Image (cartoon, rainbow, N blue to C red; front, top):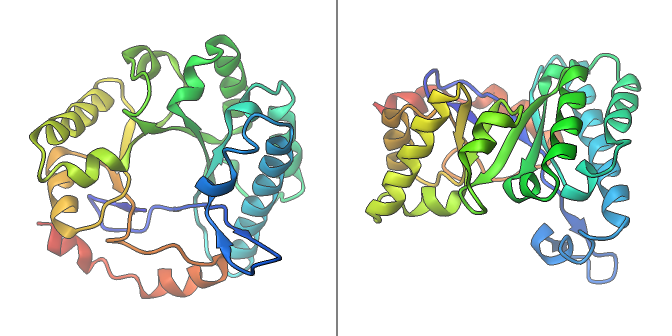
Length: 241
């Protein structure tokens, strides 16, 4: 993701992929996560993701790269009262990793299942020092109470609205309204799925803070990130003007 004001690299999102041992093909999350989302297996998977994402930050740190990473957290994890302790113990194994460089992403729909437990869990995570974001905003039961009462630092606009905003007036107005509301509630705002410079330019004019998508970079292995950052050109910002 990049900062639309400065053009600088602002961080990365940890993406989960599964290498099927039988077929040898890469399986995307949409093809296997729904089947385990309501089982205890998602807790084991979530712990593995957390461990490996923080471990990757540690590896980058040893190479001289300081990078922020956002990590998706499943609703079942947030309902687990021991999740903050899991986060804390994982960070203790990587003392060189600054907690403020980690952002936990929660799905908007997770915010309506058990609001009180969610608040308690998020506040405990915040005390540890990590940042929090509300993912896919606009796809669930969007509520101003989420923006006001959830202790999140960032609102992520779902890519379905970003992709269609240049052709559909309703999507354009919806994206603009989320950006405006985020400013009112003093939250940063990120647009997902940015696939063209024109989209980036429009978002920048709206006052959107951050953007991620194929117009910036396709997904890549963690070991390729340092070279990509070194070659990143802030000239992309000039195109946005």
